[in-house]
Image (cartoon, rainbow, N blue to C red):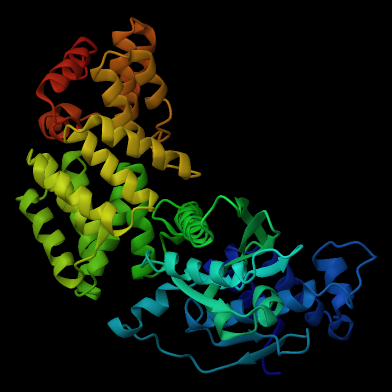
Length: 525
């Protein structure tokens, strides 16, 4: 070995502080333990038992014959190290590896590999994590029948899940037979598992009168079940095929929707991705986070990544749709001042549709454009197309409900919004804005306050602004002033773009006048 102890120690610190390993404290402990023990001359002692008890903190009753935890995590560690050396560590000259079948690490000096900067590999360089978040493995559902229950319900259920998930283009679905289930769910040694972070599995139990379907969604990065649910179907009074379609559509929406579990879980991890190399995947996540929160910080991060994307992937429809929405939000909220910004919004959305006529985000951007220009018929037409494409999608229901309400169809729009909100574990706060405006315009101020209090985005100025308005109408002036102070803190330049903002906020002149009257009393505009 021509590598010094000091060089190994420095390389170890680089690895454990990298983006790859920051997502997994367990793998950091694993690597630190086996490297430090080897450097101290104790490599021969590195067995499953010693690693489990000393590195993982498991009790002395750990049995490697019945508990594969160390063996499975060793596979994940090997993949994490490979991921590190393909991205952040591509130029490192000291390589730490763990050969398959053993736990003693190898330290080598290797030639530096120059980092390529072509657009061909910019996407792969951006993926510094072990797993890709948009890949979902659907396991074949286990089926059992009691007393002559419905046969083959599990097979049909699995197939229908694939059909429903195909409606969400951002999710890449792979499938596995039940014979390979344990290997695919637990092992990290296959190329498929290198790409797949989330696994959906479940079971179907049927009798003559009823069917019970259960599901669990596993996050293999954290090693936890992040969602589970069950569904009961009465056989005698229910169309079996219809039940399969209904359940599969519901599951696909909860998990794969723009505001579903996968998207929300990844949005919580965005802070650690801000300084990663550019990738289309991260840009999509930043855009979704911006669309969910509408804060200035989320906008600036998303806009920066989107502008890089336009240059790196000029034929990517998602990038152009994201740019259309970013330009729109940035200018109506006062975060940016693009020249001729409305035409830029329309151009970017049209460019996206030229590349993909079914682009959901582009349709939403054009609906925003028409709503801002008060072309309500065009807005309603887009709403109809969105719902026709995927009626079970909660994000489609949110968008169409929001646009329908602001286009004047308040009853239908608010019904769609309320229905979608109930289906989402973490609905975006802006969905409550239209419900607030409907209650406020009808003079139901207490109800309006309850809606705006569910708009949980503390660094966006719209929630405290609307809260200030309704508290003023309720005569709760001290609370209204506190809310107004929050608006001044978050957006001190509101007066400079008040006309643009209110044209975005409200499509009714009477409602706008009412809102602005309250804000003048609070000295906000």
